[in-house]
Amino acid sequence: MAPHDTVTEFLVRMQARDWAGAAELLAADVHVEFTATGEWFDGPNYLAMNEAYPEGWTIIVHEALSSGDRVAVQVSVDHDGQRFWCAGFYTVRDGVLAAGTEHWVTERSDPPPAWRARYTS
Image (cartoon, rainbow, N blue to C red; front, side, top):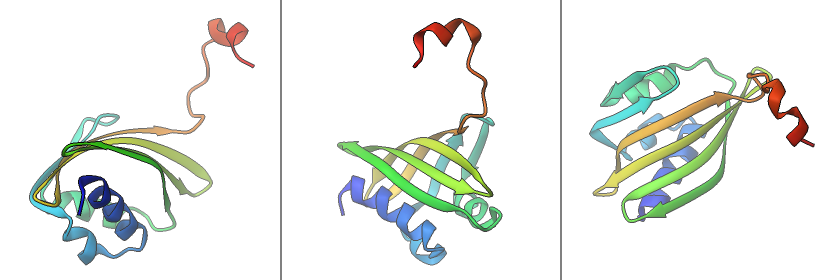
C-alpha cells in the first residue's frame, strides 16, 4: 500500500471505529504530536486516546498529498455542532504510520483581527 493510501485507510478505519484495523496501520512505536496543546502520544496511546474521544464524531478527509514516505492530509471532524480542522503530516515506514504532527483548530473559534476587515469580502 502506498504511503498516501496507508494514511487515508487509517482515517477510514478510525471513522468506522475499526480500532483493531486501525492498529494494524500504526507502528508499535508511533510518535504523534498535537501542536495546539503541546501533547505527544507514543505507541498504543495514540490510538487509545482516539478511541476514548467522546462518541458522535465524523471524520472527513478533504485532501491527501504525498511525497515519498511523507503524507499531508487536510481533515475535518464534526462533533457536537462544531467543526474541527486538522492539517496532519505523517511519515509512513514499512507500510505503517510511524510518526506524525497534527495541527488542530476549531472552525471560527478565533475572532478576526480588526485591521484585516478592509481586506475581506
